[in-house]
Image: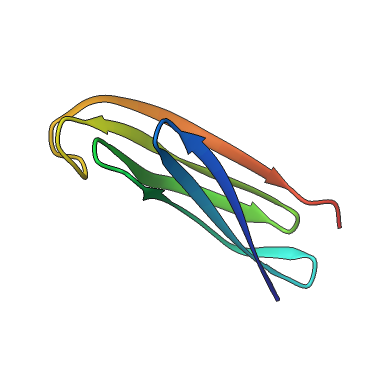
Length: 85
């Protein structure tokens, strides 16, 4: 079992993608923002995994306030993850 973390920077916050791998297959995947996240949030919408491949999709919301309050722009993003096993 291994936990793998990947980071993607956006302005002043980082999107952390957490992946749980058991054997040579992805068992679980999730994502969340951390850092200075005032004005931006990530809303996870869908996630799929099949052995050595995974996809996680969601919306990055740009807010006037925080956590979805006063959203002025929303951008759909998808991240594809592939491992060579």
